[in-house]
Length: 211
Image (cartoon, rainbow, N blue to C red; front, side, top):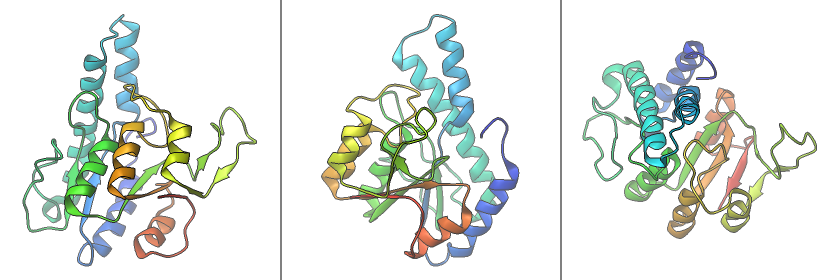
């Protein structure tokens, strides 16, 4: 959701996931995107600073987006979306969609929590960056691409505190949990569908591997 819903991307994304849905089980946790940031900015402009209010607005945005993605897959996806990582909807299909949980926890945290429960080896975090960088590349074009990082190295970059609407490669709280559980993380650009296919198949890919 850069500005409006990117339906062309969603169609391409669906084709790839469906292609491998007989071979793999996909738990797709959807973020809030621009909708989340717009509502949180409006709340702040109205003088609302309570972190729970800001988080609930973001959570609502993730669930709205998750409903869209669930509808995209139709009967191939579980009929209910994940709202609580402790309650994963049952269904015959191999595609399960989820959104945010509750204040204080990001969708990154939800993804790691689910990965722990289903014993997934890795979380693939798709956003609008090709790699994790040493600094924000928008502010410093000379920022270094970091292709491989340990969890302690990533945690130095992202800090230790979750702030509603924060724009980091990965949520600091989710980092701590993933490190503790031995879950790997891949950060890559979601728009590169061919690259995502390489990640799914365990081939060489563009992105950052953490673990």
